[in-house]
Length: 393
Image (cartoon, rainbow, N blue to C red):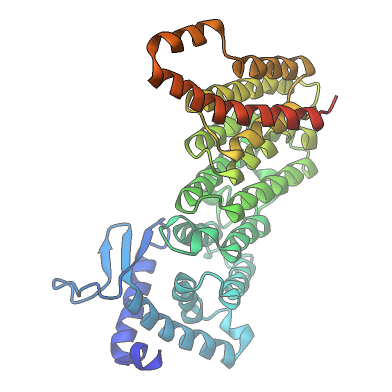
């Protein structure tokens, strides 16, 4: 590896400097990064193998490895000098960007970024010139770039998702109110509607990551943990508008719509179930918001069942969602659950008109009916048996 990657140290340093220059020029922007094949040709106009097009960056794998060697050397040289003083060393901090771009599970690099952010936030309390909000927004933009780009490991990286959660949890509410940076914050300065708006944006990031890497457990688990953190924060502050704003913000419907476009994604469907039972944590049962949400939940189940039969979905994840909602006493009223179950029973029974039409139309339609009976009705029967054995009054 060393003979291939280390050759031409000046060339490797140039690649490293070019990457840092790009990141600094777009420090507050979310960019799309893609690793190109190692044999990607040098661009004649720029004399570089790194491809830049606005907010899009492409770098050959070999060039990234060469830049990583330089970044790693700078990073550990900075740590070896003095751990405390290195927290204020911008070059050491910058090196972690290239390190994490190649290796998203580089825990030492991620932890150093935490220490650097804490040092900057501590300095901002005495130095009003320090733009706290801008610093945090740049960190979130960098993480979003890694988590939503078409990179092989980054979208499902537990290290990167945990680091983003740490930034938001430890630096709240600066991340919700970047326009107020440079002030002494109190969590009461942030309203429920601001937090909901911020969370809706985080959900969009999670859904993008879910598209890049299906069944992305780490992304959806981040969304779950973040919501629990925000619930506890707002409850401690006596902020009673957060939960109503959250459910009125149509986040449940938004995620459900995403799941109908990705029906095999069990992580997404599990998160919808988490959101639907979230009212239990918020102590709003019996409230008008809960009554309104039950109608929303009913429409979501109705849509799921209709689409499942229309497209003859056999995805286990869809039926896990349907049977869990109908078997549990958390999501819907008893009468609504029974009505849905009765409808499922009717749907798997062929009507006289269906059989008569099949006989008239001939063999092709009969075969189609047989296939539907064998697959979709079999799946529905299995779901009904599961609901019966796991029924909650």
